[in-house]
Image 1 (spheres, chains in turn purple, blue):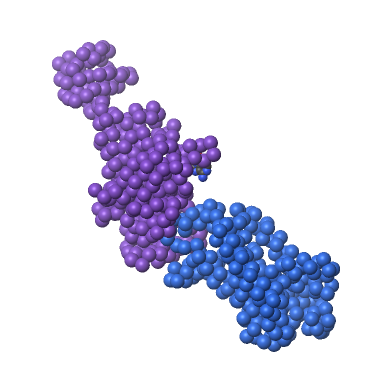
Image 2: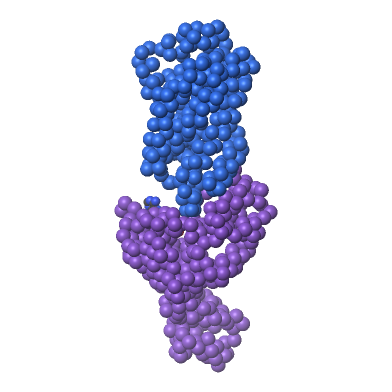
Length: 302
Length: 245
Ligand SMILES: Nc1ncnc2c1ncn2[C@@H]1O[C@H](COP(=O)(O)OP(=O)(O)OP(=O)(O)O)[C@@H](O)[C@H]1O
Ligand SMILES: [Mg+2]
């Protein structure tokens, strides 16, 4: 696999704030690489250093074999950027923005196709100030694709999109990846990270604390599955003794049994044997949420 | 080149869609024309370089059109772009700073031409202002004048961090230059100190450069070279000092 991005010991400080602290990772060709973390974790700082928009205080960066600081302009011809915080003039029209940005490179794809894919055709003559938050967001992703980039950086691409638009966006991003464009994305949505990313780094307080496929992270950091059901039975202490069960939590009628491997079958058999037949017995797979909690000690919201 | 022309075309459309800026740029010099047009008797006099007052002031107000673009329009434009994050978006694209600057220079030339022609036509109709003695030289003077003020405007836009700062300082510079550079009271009526101060201002040379061929005094090389110098210094300083955010 060809390495598209190499980051070694990246560090960025703002006054007394260490925004990015000794971060290293690689991104290979054709993958969707994600950075997941809470507000202020340093995600934007990291990807903007990679795009040559911020100057790192230490560390070695290579993007498409170029140094983002010294070869910034050459790099920006080959990458696409959707920034978390940027704008275009209010009175510019949608089609004008697309037309302008695709004129930056000679071999740009037809912007009308991109406009159509991102659901903007109907709004082509609207000025930017008249777009909804989600339409705006989609326009900026479309602009990032306008120069037919080798790598695209997406910083909170789906913030402001409704659920249907988010799913469409995910499909389009997968399609972009399948055509060979490498995708680097920043998000703080768990479901987005889990479903879309081929590999995922967890960023917390400026540090990259874990890096793996979403499934790999889940099995390493949140191995326990949960069996959940409800019952009015008073005494369930015997559940502790069932093989593969590690913990039992009870909140009123709701019972959560944590365990490993075939814990569901074991619990189900034991319940039936004792005459407890809940109608809502189910298995909850651990999610990235649990991974996040177990790695950082807090949820992504706090 | 293609990118430069495309940027210019879009910026021009954006300018036309912004009524307030348009009115300021085109109407302000006209207001001056009408307010001052009634003040003087329109007979040739020594104070006005042996010309009729309105023949003297019309080229000076063409200078005002140019100065308002450079001192007020452009700095605010850039400051707004910076504040809103438009410059950030351009920075993350392959567009070169030269194309961004170049588009502003071309747009300034077009706007100043429209504003200048409008002003001259109105003053010819309303105040019977005579046609320039050497029209070709007037046009030749107009272009480097606009370029010099566009460069000053870009430099101010590069230096002034916020829209408020740009509005404040831009307007002050505009008013001071307007009063002292030959578009306000005639130089003969100013104190020596005022006249000396006026001569440190680029607008003084713009007005000279345009007024001389208008009144039949030929091409003023000194003013021309000074404006070229101003352009080069401002352009280099802008490239060095430009802040994207
Ligand atoms: N230009 C700046 N000047 C000063 N401090 C900054 C600047 N940019 C970011 N920071 C600080 O650096 C830290 C990391 O910020 P960054 O924007 O990279 O976080 P993030 O992970 O992208 O957060 P979010 O999810 O809110 O976008 C924060 O503490 C932030 O306050
Ligand atoms: Mg961010």
